[in-house]
Length: 276
Ligand SMILES: [Zn+2]
Ligand SMILES: [Zn+2]
Image (cartoon, rainbow, N blue to C red):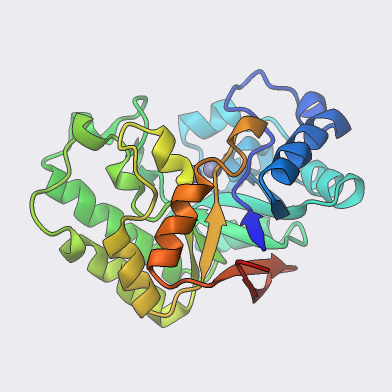
């Protein structure tokens, strides 16, 4: 069974309206794309920062600008009007774990995807609030990124760690440190081993300057050694990206002897064979 859990019905535009986004017509476009790609298990995971309630966690200016929807309305729509699995993509905000937990508990979710996009107020994957402009060195950003990812895993808030090596997103535009990158992965892999959290294999990186799947084969090998189950996703923000690049992802997984994918229901996890 193939999955796509990291899916946004909402486009990354402030002006996208709730009623257009969460509508039968829009859901139908995503479901049709999933059927076409042979993806039986389809979930949605809107960004926490889309919901006005998120400002109780963090009041970053980007969140203030984006937080227009009501989280309970979103959850009710997905539960009552669709057959999609209900999830959220939630930024890990260090020190705000309790507030994050309170919001996650507002809905009975099937799964929660934890992300690290920001280190402090600056983003690793975005030109606005770009951390790379003022960064001391790639080494400093990479070290802090994976330490924060480790803390996200240990927070216990999340079922899945999103795009685990997102810090590489810019590819040659913001070069990675030299040499074997496994020294940076280490803290995150330790946390993954301790917590048993699932990690995402995401084809979104194929659409970005780095043009690679998240995570790298070396990170994936480390995570598998740590016992991590794998969640497969595209991070689609439009229906055309559902299952994007899955042939490449399945090749990677096959090469790493991954035969099962994690499937979630009301935050309980089970494994399903990929081929079935
Ligand atoms: Zn993300
Ligand atoms: Zn996403």
